[in-house]
Length: 158
Image 1 (cartoon, one colour):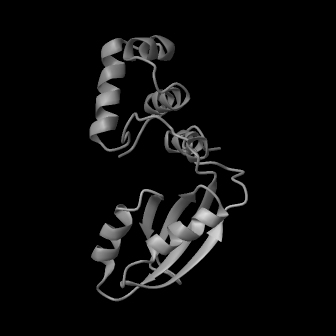
Image 2 (cartoon, rainbow, N blue to C red):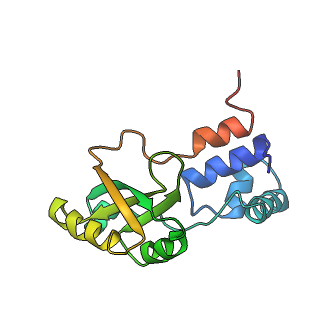
Image 3 (tube, rainbow, N blue to C red):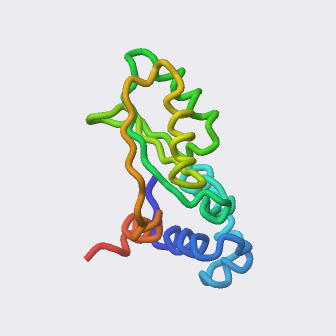
């Protein structure tokens, strides 16, 4: 789904102030409330906006250690491994990948020692042949979306 500059401005505003109401958003964007609402509805139904949940920091919840685990999966065992990993609360994301591994998951733990417990739980299923884990040292570019929104809206082009 393509977006235009107004969609981009609306998305940027929502990224900066997720709790802003449609009326205030329309005022700041200089458009009618109905226009802002219809754009918002279109972006939601088109799958561009996936939700409005809080942006929670795992470290603030007591999980300051982040790691990425690359998993090699036994042929035909993907669905079972996916279901298993979905049941591990410390698995924040799971991606199937190409390359040396089959899946990449982002994990969190309460400490480096607790990370071993999490990894043991992650690999505690027969479908995982091998796991390789890398601990995150720092996150200099946290997950962001606004630069991509600007580019998609044509604002980031020369």
